[in-house]
Length: 122
Image 1 (cartoon, rainbow, N blue to C red):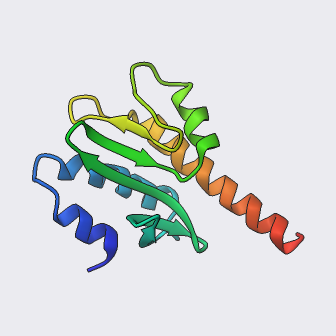
Image 2: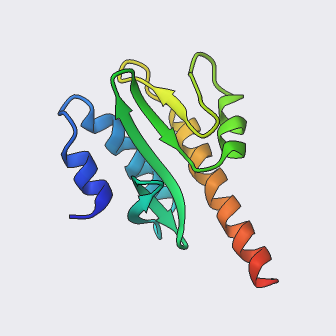
């Protein structure tokens, strides 16, 4: 079993769908995303770089796009969600809107593509 699949399978049944929803959307938007780890967390990776991770805790869940810029851009469009420099918190009662999930994914993917393009000199 891969890292993300193992994480999701180990979650309580009430939390599992909320976390799975975020990962499923990420794979729909970025079909080349692969399971792995980043910063010690199960995560989706794209082109060898961390794309997205979802964590859970007593206060709810958080999604991390591994980019403070992407996090800041998306949280600015949301009302009533808490955030850290690197992630946005949500609860089972108040999941992130689909548009926010997609913006986190597409924003991070664009950063990775741009960084690798600069690196290759293309």
